[in-house]
Length: 217
Ligand code: SF4
Image (cartoon, rainbow, N blue to C red; front, side):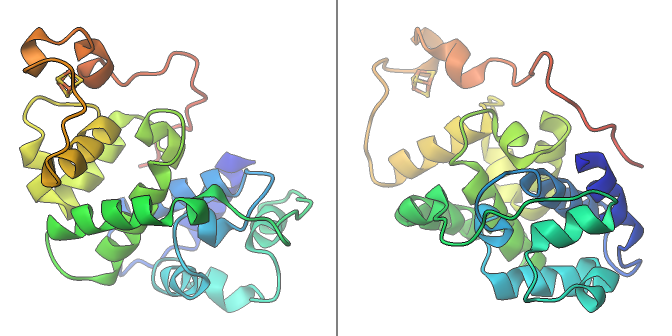
């Protein structure tokens, strides 16, 4: 079903917007649409009005055809040929409980953005919300592999991309930046090169058995 929702989104995409950004948004939205609980906007780290703007700009046919009164997940599943039992009402997503953390991450990304525009703002929010997950960031976002994530960071937050010279895992790298900003030192070793935890910070971000959505285009 995730693939069907992704295909539905991409078939509705605006030709006026960059394919790479539309693909990123479609992957993230289709991934969040599979979660049983919680509103999709909050899971993405967006306000509902931001998600509406995102649909209007990148997937305009969807924004025209969906009812804002209807659960977006129910709509997406139905439009893609499936069904979904909505459990959004009254459910708090953990993103709201860690608002200060996501706000710090959004600010970090914003401080390193390539330009001021809505798409970059939405991507920063989506990346920050993804950092609250338990897996590699590219997995928590629903991307197909780490390169998808590196590409979007390079395009929208080049200051951070080029700062990660050691190819540190992205989540670790973002949080290390936050610690460095406030001069908090959580690392036990004097430097990464002599650290016992090196593999945790710099090891490959692969995922054997991860259910890959076939890369589109
Ligand atoms: S490798 Fe060790 S010293 Fe370097 S960031 Fe990770 S925990 Fe800190």
